[in-house]
Image (cartoon, rainbow, N blue to C red; front, side, top):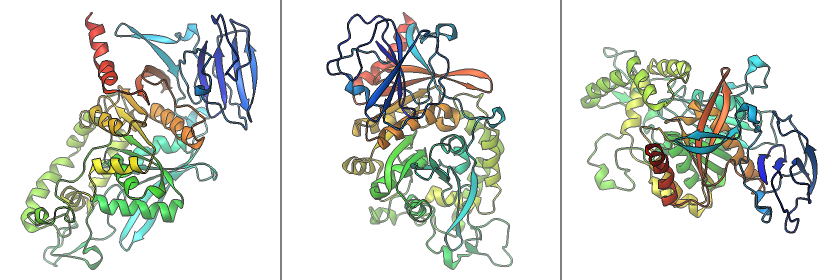
Amino acid sequence: MEIISCHALRNCYIVDFRGVKCLSSQGSKFPILRRNRLFYFLFESGSSRYFRFDSVRLKRFHQIRTSGRACSHDNYEHVGSSVISETLNSYVLDGEEGGGSVTDSGQSVPRVSIPSLPDEENGDNVASISSRFWEWKPKLTVHYETSGSENTDSPAVLFLPGFGVGSFHYEKQLKDLGRDYRAWALDFLGQGLSLPVEDPTVQSQDGETNVWGFGDESNTWAKELVFSVDLWRDQVRCFIEEVIKEPVYLVGNSLGGFMALYFAACHPELVKGVTLLNATPFWGFLPNPERSPRLSRLFPWAGTFPIPSRLRKLIEILWQKISDPRSVTEILKQVYADHTTKVDEVYSRIIETTQHPAAAASFASIIFAPQGQLSFEETLNRCRKNNTPICLMYGKDDPWVRPIWGLQVKRRVPDAPYYEISPAGHCPHDEVPEVVNFLLRGWVEKLESDGSMILPLVDGESRVLEYTRDGCRRSVRVQFHGSNFSVWSWLYSQVKPIFIQNM
């Protein structure tokens, strides 16, 4: 028997009893059924209904809504099933469409079809995105984007961006996940459209330029301003308390992942769960003055305004290099494993940000800001102590944050599901949003159902997820490590394809 597909949001199972010689109903909620049949189960309020399909060539299922919860596969101890996939809104492929597996490096890998991104031109329902501003403090206005405000009874999800980008980097999530949840994505202060609205420094008449932050002294409102992780932590806290007004699921990529974990460790009461997308395991090069007061005194500047005159030439050289359009193009080539991914919008938004008069000084403040009050390891320990749910989704082909860093988190938080995606680089949410959205939906629904729904995919095994984009069929391989994870199994999954290929 095979559970071919579990539609957690639709509360149904597709179960294949073909080839099963003996099926006991003892200890199982399945009724005794005839062999060699494919059955469709609907679970409603503790009871089940089932239907037989005479043909196993199933196409896409129509949306089916029920009021009950889907039962967990863990309840079916005596069924002896082999789970091919447990998916949200998934498809079942028949033999003519490619069967249920593909050959990869000489080994058969089951294949699962997942939903594509909604396409408004094809008549799909796409969540509308609103761009808004929120004044947090005088002269400090935070830009954010939001979708799904009509989903009043749905969970709240907050996306945190990486370094150098902003809320625009999550528009593929807002348009899709905003159909089911209430979603927000914000720009950290000093990035995106959350740059200062005025020059944080006072310039003499003779030295006035169109570049902010290089004046003679700081303005009153910017006396203590530093674009640091502790400032961003406070920004996120106030944003959740004043704008969202309820605990959220945090999702962060790169720097945003570091901040998601950092925030959860400091304010667990405001966090329902954390998803890390290739999270950087550290941030800040200078010591924190509270943790290392003596050492921090060796560094006379810690990201405040104005930029010291002795460092201005260095900052100008660095900024000219990093903001050069050719450098931006090269960086995008590095972080995206699939170079067919359309990054024109990301590129143009980054270039637009670099034209802001406060961009260079803000960049300098971020780079020279001190480290946070907690290290990455300490945040993990706190989150584990607080039982904060964590989910890991890492692009395997990231040249900057290699999957080994995700593995380190997995070792410290064994209960965290760990999805390794390939091909995908540093920004899997933008490169393979279909996959990330699919996995994120499954994880959130599991937590919202108090564990009665099962996670997407099968613990310890690889799956090839297929979807359609721009009229072309695409595939991505995902390795899922759940509660049965071990370092040796992970190493085995890495080297096995190499040995098979060389045989």
